Length: 182
Image 1 (cartoon, rainbow, N blue to C red):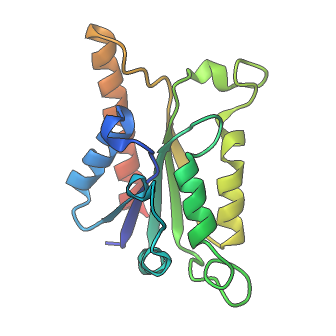
Image 2: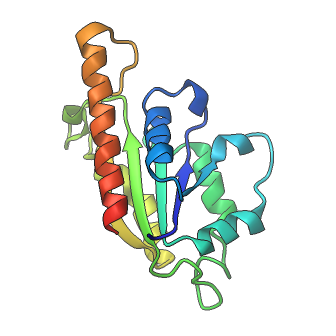
């Protein structure tokens, strides 16, 4: 099987509802995968060499995060800024990530109807992934598409909570299937 690196970009994973469950599911079912938890670096610097080695040793990179204010969480943005540097990730001296597969898995609090043109969020979800798509292209990562689960509202009860848990389970299973197919 390919070497998989799962990068959790949630700022507060312990108090996450969906992202925590997705990560736990992957950890149970991808026992050979490596997991990187960016929230552990909120008050300290990344070990750049260690992060780059983990990326270079992987065949598949999975990003798991919620959309915060129409973008990836700030800790994930910082990770890209600090780790995906000239000479490692891009340009003539770089390309250590060339042809590695990138899978993006994300959650949002809004419903799918809000992520349509001119609706509440004004744009489809794909628009909010543009920066990650451009990073992938610049670094010669193979964009292997994305999985998105809408309407993550942990403040529901009863039947709605059961439906939400089923939605998260379905997301996790599809994500696992995609990773294993690469």
